[in-house]
Length: 175
Image 1 (tube, rainbow, N blue to C red):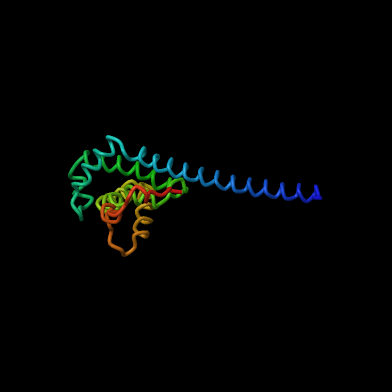
Image 2 (cartoon, rainbow, N blue to C red):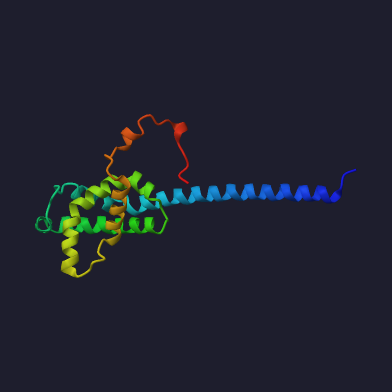
């Protein structure tokens, strides 16, 4: 004959293990949902008509442009810097707080973010001194420094090269 206490003990152990597995799956699903929402938040933060306009203006800035040369280009360029900078301030802070991963930002907008920062950095640094506001575009700069550290000395490789052999079956969860 079987012992009722042993049977109940086994049943409670199996139930506990099942509950732990279920909880683990729920946490995994929640993390994936959070990562997907974070990616959507980045898209919402940066992809707009104003973002596109500021990008069109700033991408025309030559490498090595000085703060005075940017000033001479007038309000369209400084307005584009403000539009671009404020949005990337938000993205930088989201990365800092762990709301979105640096990997996601790097994959989505890392390259253009570093290019834009390299073009406007002299203007930002000079404007910080001019306005006595060292916190101006602080999260934008912080984000670029993290992206730069992440890339290290490796040559940037565009997604169309890095993922040229990708197939639908290769899609992986972001969490």
